[in-house]
Amino acid sequence: MNRSIALLSMTFLGLGCESENTVKRIDDNNGGVPTYGDVSGRVCDPTGFTWLEGASVYANLADPETGYINEVRSTLSDDSGNWLLTDLLAGDIAQIFVQKGSDLIESHEVTVIKDRLIKLDTPSCFDPRTIKVAVVSGNYDNFDRVLDDMGFTDYSVVDGLNKSELVAFLSDPAAMAEFDLIFFNGGHVEDGVVYDLDAPDNETVALIRQNVEDYVTTGGRLYASDWAYDWVAQIWPSKVDFLGAEAKPDAAQLGTAQLVNAAIADYALNDFLGDADQRMSVDYDLPVWPPIVGTSSTVSVHLTGTIEYRENSVTLAQSSSPLLVSFNVGEGKVVFSTFRLVANNNADTLRMMQYVMFAL
Image (cartoon, rainbow, N blue to C red):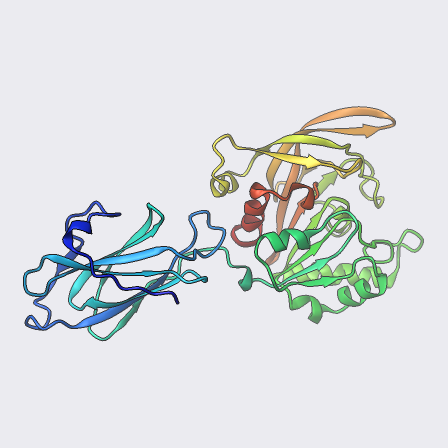
């Protein structure tokens, strides 16, 4: 950890802090003989996106004889947001300040105990290392690129264009259970996996569907995007009403290329994004995608928008079409986005994915 301890004259003690006295005396500090304790904590970036490196953490100290502030203990947070202040006066209630530049992020009042390390509670913060993700690759989305931008360095990719590899993974409940979240990119092999156009009673397809349903029911999370909607339509057909003959594989892909000014319909998501106008742009950059007509009452709708689709060579519009939805299944959750994530790989989308993966 990058640490520094500074001894500052009283001339500089007002910098970064409006309080004139940031130490409260609670005893005579061992009869005037100084004793010390330590305090540690962790700081998250104000965006909530990552642990904050290089935050300035400091506490003012009082002279044990006069009670006047004449020293400062300070340090910097390391690359994991951890910090440690040492040699704080025992018997004091030390007020600890955490700053990023000139902005005060947080403050803490801590009773310092002789020869003890006081560990503050770890704040809620996005940490890619706490979740295991499997990505089923496909031709029409690249969730792995989004994961890279979110700070993930350790995730597994299942080749969704290799039918044998995909079937082997989804036929093995133990292999699936190793992951907290399985993401299906649009454009992976589906025929003979999630449906069979020639043999509707295909036993392998039935096994895979059951395995996926069981995975979610027992606490797993499934995220599918764009053309991967068949996982939702085939396994949970009553949850989401897709445009067209949804029971027929790929029949709902009627949306057209367009930019949608989406409304954030989920207040918690809007608060998480900190978006005052409750709007975000969603780019449908491919000529076909699966619009949603409606949902059951047990489905949460997070984004909506007026969209255009083509039917019998005629372009039509639908208002308030759900664009991002989720629903619970047992102990787990299913999330579906009608849009490609990689085509919307911006700050709002990254924050939205934090919400989906950690807060939803």
